[in-house]
Every structure is written in structure tokens, then in C-alpha cells.
Image 1 (cartoon, rainbow, N blue to C red):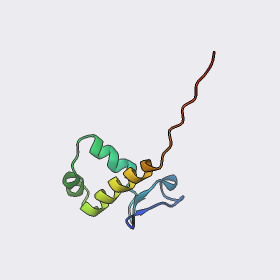
Image 2 (cartoon, helix red, strand yellow):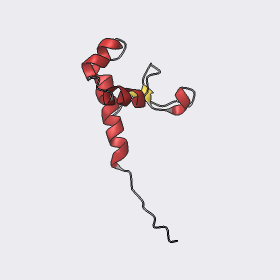
Image 3 (cartoon, rainbow, N blue to C red):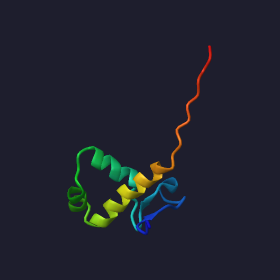
Image 4 (cartoon, one colour):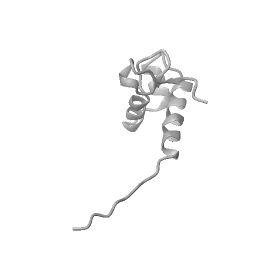
Length: 76
């Protein structure tokens, strides 16, 4: 499903990165959060493809799908 995303403890401490690069999914999210479009990212980083950026976004989205939010009530 995510053949362009890899994780290796020897690269960026195991953060998910684009295969063959040291560009993390997190960094792509930061760029997009700062207003960069997919096309701008690919233009500025020609070793990335549009598919790399799309897979990074899909990977990030899928990582939140199974999150469970636990709340705790603290009594004084």
C-alpha cells in the first residue's frame, strides 16, 4: 500500500521517510502546513515525485485512523 514510505532506525531515528531519501513524512506535512502545494514541493525538490508527496499524505492520514483518544478525569 505504501511502497514509497520506509522506516529504518538508522535513518532519522526510524521516522517514516520517502524511500531513497532522508525526507520524512513529517517534513512534507510541515511544508504543506506552511502553504506549499504538492507541485511546489516537487518543483523545489526534483528528486521527489507527486506520488511521493501523495503517499506521504495518505500514510499520515492512515496513521491517525486507528488512534484511540483516552481521557482521564483527575479528582482533586
